[in-house]
Length: 174
Ligand SMILES: [Ca+2]
Ligand SMILES: [Ca+2]
Image (cartoon, rainbow, N blue to C red; front, side, top):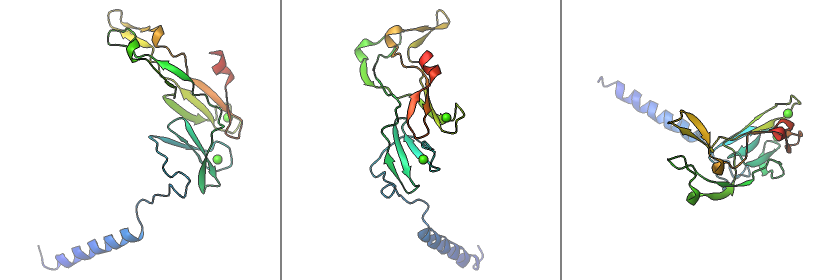
């Protein structure tokens, strides 16, 4: 290596370190945002109440409204239902495994937001994955296991524009 190359390399490294100290890549603002101690696996930002600021939905069931883009406050009056259901898993042979049955709050596998009725606000699409069907190889088709059916189905929830949802008419008919 030529001798003149060594000082240049050191200068670049020093310059890079100084820049990183001045401007960190990540700043934790959870406390200032009103979310100190809040844990979640996934989150969706969408404007639930139409005020122009992104609100937050965590883990498909906890809602927060933005206070002018500065912080978030819990929004519990959203109206979306999370019923208690009995979950009965399907055993390897296609029989319900009643010993592993558990009662728990039902949280949909998917919760997305879109303006499905074209009135300008974000509605909620509540997606339920079938856990009551089992693939029977001998018959080459899925069969329903009634004991494993918690009876909750995919639904559309319509927003009234303030972040309060009611079950959509098509969902009631299903
Ligand atoms: Ca908002
Ligand atoms: Ca809408």
